[in-house]
Length: 207
Image 1 (cartoon, rainbow, N blue to C red):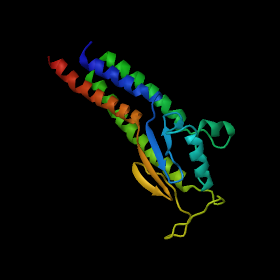
Image 2: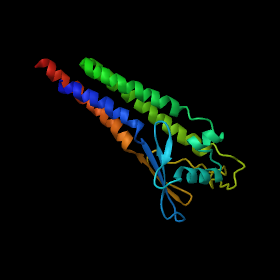
Image 3: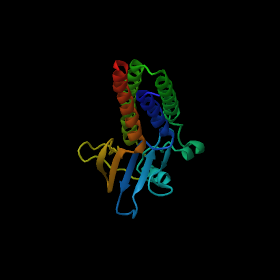
C-alpha cells in the first residue's frame, strides 16, 4: 500500500480514538481542596479529571453559586438537566468522518484527501465555537435564587463564572485552568496526517 494511503487510514484511526480519550480538560485549584478538581470533556460525556467524584463535586460547587447542573450522565438520569445535544451529534460526526477517512484512504485520490481535511478544519472551528458558547451560557445563565450571590463591583449585576476557554482564570478563590486534552491532539494529528497524505500522494503520482 502507498504511503499516502497508509497515512490517510491512520488519520481515520486517530480520529476514531476520540471515543476513548477526552478532548478538553478543566482543572480547579483552591486552598480548601488538598487535591485539585478536574473535569474531562469527551465527545459524548463528562468524566472525573483528577479524583473520583470530581464531576459530582464540581457540579455541587457550581450549583451553590447558581450555575446550571452539568450535563453528566447522572444528572440526565435524575432529570436534573436535558441531555446535551452535542453529546449526541459529536459521536455521529466523528464516526462518519473516521469511516470517510478510511474509505478515502483506500481510494487514494489526493483531491479527496484535501476535501476531507477542509471539512475537518471547518468542523474543528465549529466545535471550538460551540465549546466557547457553551462555557459562556453555562457561566452567565445563573439562578437568581442561588444560595451564594456575588455581584460585579462595576456593573452591580450578578457575577459571571465563565471558565476560561483556553488558559488560566481566577474565579473567586479558585484558580481555573482549561487546556486541550489528548483527544484534541489526536484530532489535530489526524488532520496533519491527511495533509501529509495529500502532499505525498502528489509526489507518488509524479513518480
